[in-house]
Image 1 (cartoon, rainbow, N blue to C red):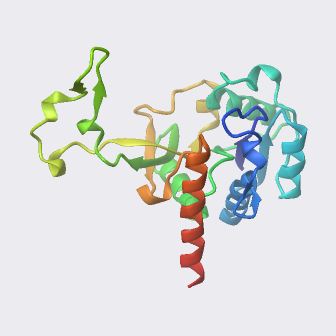
Image 2: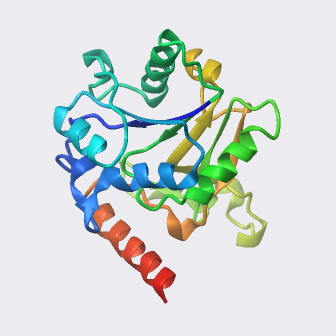
Length: 232
């Protein structure tokens, strides 16, 4: 049994009520639920939340909210791994152990059902603990620099100052869309960004963290272009 778990706590600070704020005509969380449904991969789609309004919206769009997330996993410091581990243990207690559990972020409206399918294929391609969405940094992180307290700048990787851009190492970052994992990986708290994990590449143009309203506006622009292309 494959299970999708969508973490969605109620205490968003920078964008209040972010998980259910209307994004391109639907509550933000609805897009993640719909992608999970459209993939056809999941026997259960569960939203882990501490918030009654979020739970009601999730159920309206076809997800389950079979438990209330405990307070100790609902503050600003609760990590994704701990939240998914809680849902995994809950399933075990119900006698419904999963073969694979996919964490899908509630704020991932650019996610594609096909990417979820690719993620499961990658997870099952070997003895991997996790498979998760990534994208390449652009521009290269190896050309990054920082402002110094006394003024001036310093490169973070000065050894690459003279390296041609096409010769720089490829650096990846978390695309913050989905994380497939083995149940024991979640419950053991294995770190996702490690050698036992495999990347699932997402095009750079279809990746956008949504932490503030500037991010939100940019994500809506990308989404509208995506849906426009699909209807032409």
